[in-house]
Image (cartoon, rainbow, N blue to C red; front, side, top):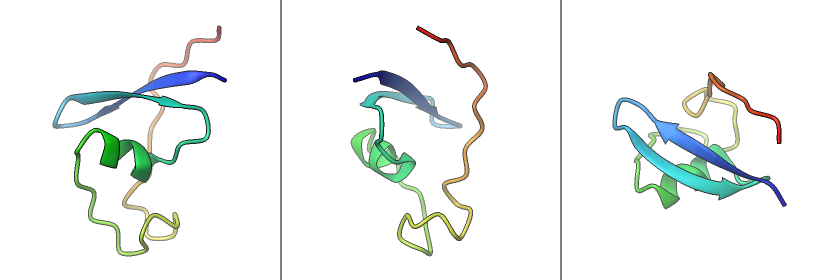
Length: 57
């Protein structure tokens, strides 16, 4: 299974997670609080992400 590094800005906290982990789960693992009105269902836009570097292995 693939793993990925996720960095939360502006905190600068980085966490490594396995493929299939949600952004909300990664934030919890990194101890980064994301105020999500929908509870991580992906409808409020608070956990929207931007991929800025993607390296294929």
